[in-house]
Length: 101
Image (cartoon, rainbow, N blue to C red):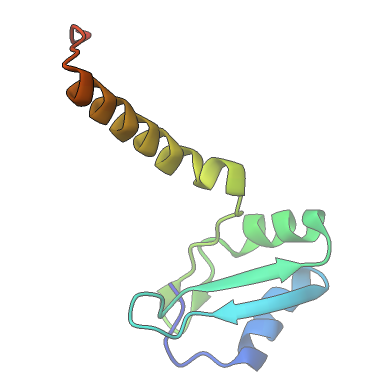
């Protein structure tokens, strides 16, 4: 929920207070504008920044700061993909299972 006109220096000022930053990637397409990935050198600094900056007001916009966990982020898409694959197999072989109530 970042302001579209935020600069890299402003990002470093805001997020750098919580530890050494390895990388900041700011979204620049229409789908990713207003978003960024901030990568810290230390996992504890990242968690600390997440705890302190979520809800922080920047240019009248409140930040939504999330801690990225790839195994949780992709689990839902993996589950959906597995369900689609199972449904295709059922359809291919003419199988059906009773619905759970």
